[in-house]
Image (cartoon, rainbow, N blue to C red; front, side):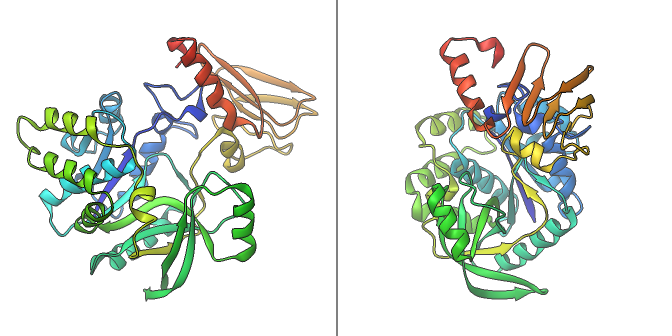
Length: 358
């Protein structure tokens, strides 16, 4: 079994801590380990470090090499430009197939938070068993706790099989990020799960699926395949990526395929998608105030605030539902519940060419 960690993206919703050169997965939001280090730590008990691959951009490759000394340098795969998850997963599948044509791939985002890591590991092992014989594409579904519009939804179908007491279901349909009314309908009907973005399949199976549903991208992958391990590898990959369309594996393959299975997983999952999500999962004091990096806080009649500030005493007086985040050169003050709009600040900085703050 091999692992592929997808470490792309900018994490603009985590500005000002998340910057172009140091996106969310490279941050130590919850303590001494960064999110990607935590991701690697939780799978090492079942997948050795020489079978873990990280796909990232050239901007972050050196920092990942520094943060992940246990991962061989040749296992850090560099994309010349971001093209979403379908090309990323395809490149990793090609690389792994050269080592092991029958390999099982576990695909994980670099920046999720898991409370019960042992439960996750058991589900990944079960998913590997489900994917081992045949062409099944397995995804991990999360029981929803509310009508969240920022996630994809999986419609759970009939039971496919039971492995070591764990139920594996057919997927009836995949609805990528539906609107508010539709998510409420899904929850009232039942039988829907959040799409966690975690997948397990044979490397050969996902390449066949890409060939079927994304033939242009598959052709590009085949062009790259001929160059892997040769002196022309980097230049060929750059050329091919330059003409590839940007598309996610969810839109491009999973929504169309009829061989998708899901295993529900209740292991305390969060995609850590915003500062609001940090407040939700972080520990809090008796007034609901939270500081993931354990800032010193005095709170007088102040409730349900998130504070991410270093080396200062923070005094709160009669304030509620605030997000306060400080870096060396920036200070964010945001109403809790509005952190999705932080991307608008980033857009303004881009438009004004204030690149030093990005």
